[in-house]
Length: 167
Image 1 (cartoon, rainbow, N blue to C red):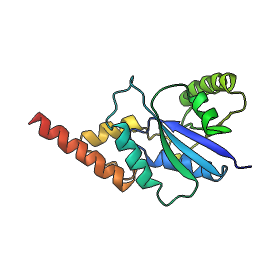
Image 2: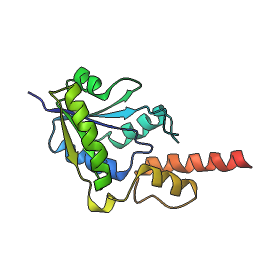
Image 3: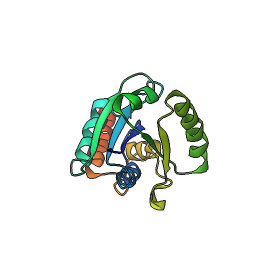
């Protein structure tokens, strides 16, 4: 029986920290589905389609990885629909764990067969958050150490469009 997991997030943008957690998950599970959550409460820089494109390019050489979009509904229901036995969550600091712990208990209530697996990224990514990457990149800072080259290219394109629209 294959061990399938889902790795949900907004991934706006997908960072090397996200990739590190994905690689760790692939060491444990046979298949991992990266689930891009469409969150209307967050002001995303990239559209869901752009995020899916960037992640598909990044993972193109990995086996056992798929990328899907969750437009609406409960993550636990989607995990059940995909036959996932685990939900992967990256935890960088204690503050992350408190929120993720609450969500894992709720997901367990909604879908008892699923287990939340908390994975910590490499220490060099513990302070890397998508929101910080977006802000620094839009202000012209170099974030190339923290994102895949295709993400860097997309961030540069967004920054150029932002400056053109302000002109």
